[in-house]
Length: 264
Image: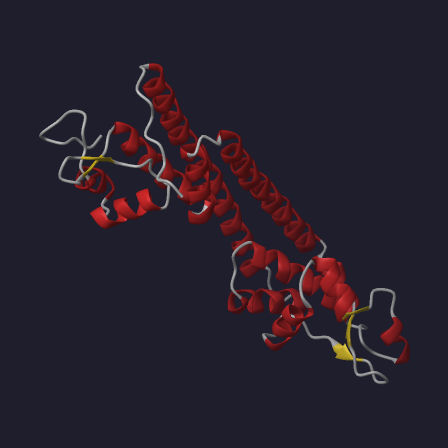
């Protein structure tokens, strides 16, 4: 724990900053944002912090890797405003998103298992007059709605080569056959996994041609690793937040009110 050489109880901004390699301005910014409780002030107007502030900073920095900066900020703000239930709700939402991402990964792996038969069926996709009314065909609006995207996103993916719909000869509308729908789903899942369009394009190409699954398998392996890292980071953040909450409770139990947040 950072210590002020002049006092065992009062800490300066630089004492909090040094522990984490931050600038003193960053510490002041965190206080202004409500991430830290409001600092005390000396008669000359200098900020003074306590071990409780140091705990808040540790909790916030531990929450960021698992929850992201914005959510971590909201969690700490809620805690410092005495709205612990709101903080717990935000944490629950992050865990629910992580679970959803794990399910998405399972869906991608399921698509990989189904890759070979789908690729074989592609050989006849889009040929012949009956292809425009195939059982798996979809127009851009329904497909976008099914994936929870905007049609503009699918058009952007088309320009990036992720999907290759054909045009209806009578209306000129884009028509997505079963293979296109599969590619759009896979692209959507990989985007949610954090992959950029330029990273997804070669994976989709490999899926189409079945010329080799190694790139896709490597991406899935990396995705597994990142989800596990995020899960462990959430555990670390939870431990630091619990330590901060416990110290705040003890501070209040000693008859010393915990520092209140800055007035909004």
